Length: 237
Image (cartoon, rainbow, N blue to C red; front, side):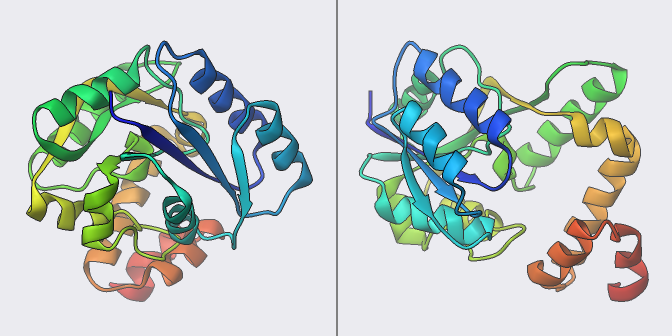
């Protein structure tokens, strides 16, 4: 079993962070270390980290920079990047170890929505799996993991607030096998339920298309967080 450093960027969501740290402590195999990179410089976040023996570090609130900061501090052979709202499968560290036994340089978990599950979630999960298998980039909510050596070799995450994993995954695939795992990681479906399953999916595709057409991640993040995604195609494409 390789030593695994878990890196979690966080900003203003104590409940979900607490739940994730509790899950990590209940796994049959434990990571070598857990690093939480706090983009809000929150005393409450620090208290939660102390409760679950996780290392706490403050950073500016930019997910790409938070990942980079955590990776620079990590000591494990493998870096496992998790979003704070993830729900884990039963034995993810064993699945990660099995991937490296297949000479992988890294990989990602199968995207699966957490409850409630409907026909819409099944269709979306299937299309996301196809996209990732056939040239698309798995995003950060799929629990990306990579050997520390490869991470350093390819330059790590981009220092962006959105799509920070895209150059990392593309470069890692040029180095070696970046494997999809059968084991799922469960993604909180709250935002999809609030926005509408298909509306949010379409907005996410517009973000990806705009990024592919050269719109900067910082401009896209401003639209995303201001809920003006509908302006993307009118303004930038």
